[in-house]
Length: 146
Image 1: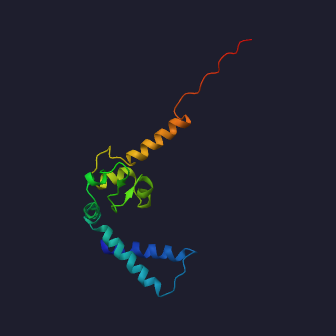
Image 2 (image 1 turned 60 degrees about the vertical axis):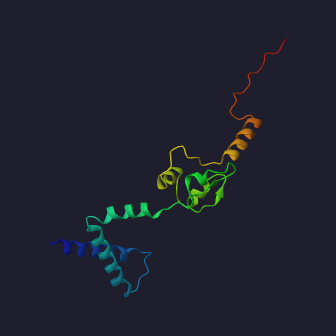
């Protein structure tokens, strides 16, 4: 059996499985197009260098909107390298773009200690936590004189 025959049979099996699904609403005109799509996809997957070429292209596409120095220039906010806008904390902004802080640092070749929170915002949160007593051990009850 040749590779082309295997590919055609696999594409046919995938199409049959798709049609057997009770949730699939397809007309007879949709079947040939779906079969062709499955066949083309399987041929692309068989190419040896197809999977390796894509990640390299993605890594090159991301150019920072601002420089690292400019992103950290103000103590009031951090400029995002994605869109160049100021943020006091980057975590929510990054999650909106589907990134974790580690992925963000890796994407723009930032050091591991690159901050995700602006210094003044961090300090104000620290002061508030101290005021309400976070981080202290509870006081021991003093013995009463009887």
